[in-house]
Length: 294
Image (cartoon, rainbow, N blue to C red; front, side, top):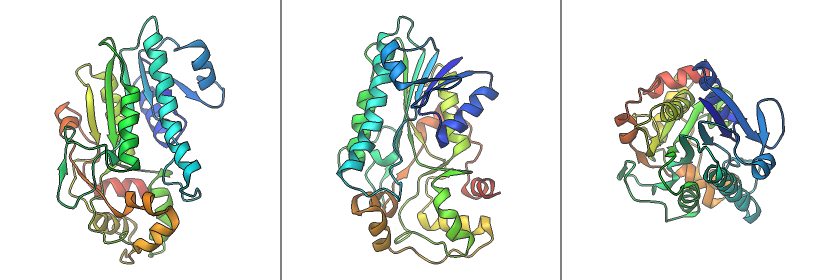
């Protein structure tokens, strides 16, 4: 298949491109910079969709960038980087003389309200209680295409674990020094997925014609808490991981609203993902983290 990937030069895009090429697909990236096997967002806007069989959008400013203050300007960037790229691709698909067979968007489990007791699958309600859940609702609505000619899939991703990026990047140093530990109470659920499985779910959704609608992009080990994660990461590194990060520190670094993404969590079940026949490479946290820190 010829696959067009928006925002494909980032952490997830790199892993997805590698897997797609290994499976014999041809990949073109949409990015800000021109280059080989790339088109720019401006070219997409002016010339429309290049001939392709599937489109994936991964574009979006990193919400948990600790170097950016959580102010109105950054919130606007977080919003527009997702909505504008999604709108541009959806519009190009709608106008294409030969529309692609599949259109896949990656959003997040922030759609579901944090809770210590609730369990969420793909049909659970959400999307209307804070900045992030409203963002996911707007984002998914922007992607919706009229008509039936293109299969539409939304993957709501958990925290992505992998080499050289994602959430682990910032955590490794303190954990390697034996200074890691749970965040806040540690009781909050920690919906996670290994990068190879997120790329795997996206590839499965591209290749399998029966897959459509919402899939939860999380591992089936859905009872994992933040304390479990800290303990497993310490174990993978052969280091103790008992020093908790107080919630006040997290709020100071990220701002109160953004800090809820780390201090609170959701128990998210990948019911439909498993039902589509996807087989996880890393269903268990211990093995996933051993691979990441190897």
